Image (cartoon, rainbow, N blue to C red; front, side, top):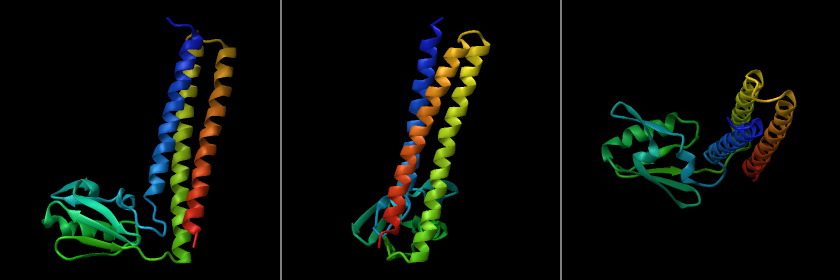
Length: 191
């Protein structure tokens, strides 16, 4: 059986890795929120009912941004174009698709002040989900630390030191997330 410090170090390393993944996931979700510019990642969260299977749009079509205010969606299967249009209309991206039978075009309009504030709310909710994910990692790791102590594999001092370290890690990751949130808010509110 490895000494308690090795086990605790492994738990903290695992927590750090999982918190970093939660942070990266939140960062990716932020990129799917529209600012004033066209970006193919705006459509990452859209799923299409493709012959009864909910399929991510980026698996059904080539998505590109040929201009600063235009996104094009080129379906691999032309018969899915109506379903793709329907999925985009029902999503929260706020873009109106038009198609010519081969290609779906999405014009990205200038954001109104009201829509900018709605998008800030969406981003704040995504950030809160990220914070919750990070806190869940902390909670799980705390539980594992308590189990080590109750099994006699770690002393109270070891557990306490690890909990302090875990809290510092949690605060740092939430601080990083808040920094990314602030930058995204500024990007959305920038006129």
